[in-house]
Image 1 (cartoon, helix red, strand yellow):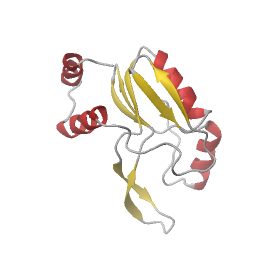
Image 2 (tube, one colour):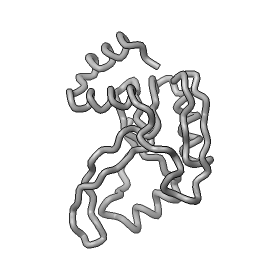
Image 3 (cartoon, one colour):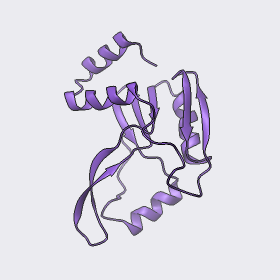
Image 4 (cartoon, helix red, strand yellow):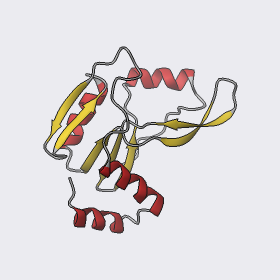
Length: 145
């Protein structure tokens, strides 16, 4: 985890906007915004002790999220990773084909060498399903670095 002066340098070097800085700071200063497993009966909840973060990181699955947590722990490009950051407002198309703003809790907030990233972790199988069933909200794009 970054020390205060490192975090300040990180934000300055990446021209983090005031709104993004507020969100990142809120995430860093708070407990996870929700308890894992509260919304899905089929999840397997676990904790991974993170030396990088100096705390336990909770996950909702023994497949995708747990694997992502372990990869983040050892990825030198990931400086910090926070589970269940505060909800954000996103716009999506509902079943009635209308755009609507909803509150959404990402799985993780990462501070990477190239900048902050909000992450939703899904298995490839689940992504393929979402791309077909909810094509107005989920699209396939090329991987970005």
